[in-house]
Amino acid sequence: MANTATRSFLQVAVTEEATPPLRVVQIEGLVILKIIKHCKEFSPALVTGQLLGLDVGSVLEVTNCFPFPIREEDEEVEAEGANYQLEMMRCLREVNVDNNTVGWYQSTMFGSFQTVELIETFMNYQENIRRCVCIIYDPSRANQGVLALKALKLSDTFMELYRTNTFKGEKLREKNLSFVDIFEEIPIKVSNSALISAFMNELEADTPVTQCDYDRLQLSTSPILERNVEFLIECMDDLSMEQQKFQFYYRNLSRQEAQKQAWLQKRRAENVARKNAGEESLPEEDPTNPIFKPIPEPSRLDSFLVTNQIANYCNQINGVAGQSFSRLYLMKALHEK
Image (cartoon, rainbow, N blue to C red; front, side):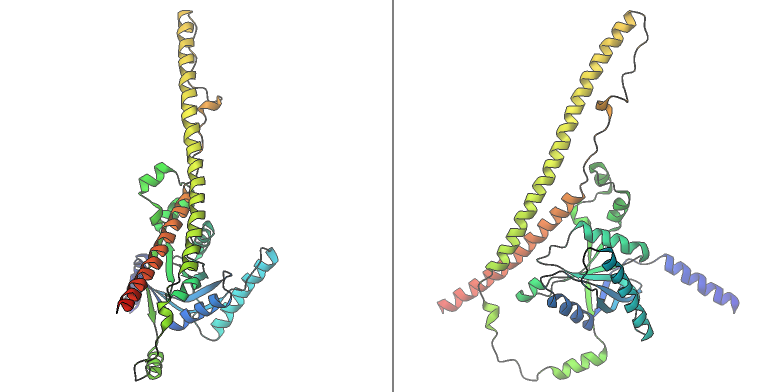
């Protein structure tokens, strides 16, 4: 009996070491409603909250959540926020509710969430939680009839480079890492208990809806389109500044290489003269000379994030424009009839 228990424990230990990759984030419908309610109440201010649940194999189950109070940049306020989280977790544990942290959620406006702060938060969570996710909700897209809910995690390759802070061109080419490989989007599956599903079936009307929803035919999308284009222009300016940094770096690199070659030619000519005079040759490299000191290459992290954000804005503009064209063609057909 003891051997069986020992074997079972070892099997469990081996199973825990070989954890399967995260495939699905399963969220209960009540949790999604809480996230939407919290983000909409404080919109356009950005809010965050804690996700609670269980990590079961390749599925991350999110069964509960609670909001964080809006804090200011103050040490005392941050300490109060940490105490608030601990107190909430203690209260949930006392009422026998899942209190295991599996990540956090945050709101965004027009998809502008890909920042260095988000990456730093991910890395802080990764120190204590092996697999965590961030749920991103965009309340600005809810007016378009879109549930803009995403589950994101950092890729393993990116986290490895971020820990060593080596975002150089050679290292990125070695790891084959591009701007699209920073975040990994995990599919979301909405789950409800059987009791809630039965209750919703009872609430569903037996007869089809006869009231027409004319708001769906609204042709004006200029506010959404304008904001996305404005953010896109700002990102293009940021990308241009990042490109100027690299142009300045490569310009200094080529200037240093020219100075180095000129210095080497001068030193070689001097060594030839010393050799003819019977004197010892001088070393061709002088570590104390500034031209032999390597110029630090700027990090490519900011340019990667800006490029990723530009791609996000372009996708949103493409989606809004596609819906607008569909409405226009529909209205054209109705007018012709």
